[in-house]
Length: 303
Image (cartoon, rainbow, N blue to C red):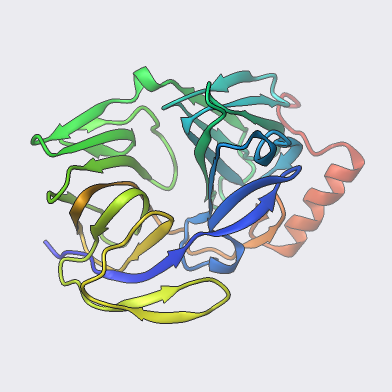
């Protein structure tokens, strides 16, 4: 096995989205195509309802998949296919926009007013961008929890660990989406598919994500880089971008660590991206926005 080493580290930066939701953007437009097939990752985390109650009113998507994972609070969903639902603590929504969907996502806090969750965007290849949209709502009780030894707990959303497969399947980019908790001063080793993009986003605690503990490039936002020393641990709000290999090793510090592991097969296709729509060419984007303006954007149910 060849253990992956860290290629780069990104720090999440504050931004506003939707109708005025305060969140942290981990990566987005400026990282394309570096993290192919992934396009965007947002971390929304606040105990102040004014930061999130404006929500994400009705808006379109085409050509991508949006994956929403809630740790605390809830997100209410509605869409042009007639789906309605609420995802709460530990639930996930995996929506394939395909040839076009209009939806809204309206967040709410828990009993203490806390909202915490993540939204990941995954690209679709040109062959699937105009597929029929689909909506999957997976409840916490349907997401298996695997314990590797007595020191690590893994929630398997997509992918497989120790022979246990997550409930989200048949996704074209062959993703893994794992929520991993490692107890203090313990290690976690996991195989990954060679050639796939491998990302780890730290939620809580700190860890070494590179067994060599070599210095690596650290992007603080706006293209400002410095070298991250070999003895430093990676903490919350940071994204580890791995280089090539077929295995990762994570050594938790004295606090333990919790992180999201996302892997996927790169598409290696051109990306034309404007707002909520991601296609392969500028012409395809133009058609999408013209259809949106003319009222014939939605294709579902027209065949």
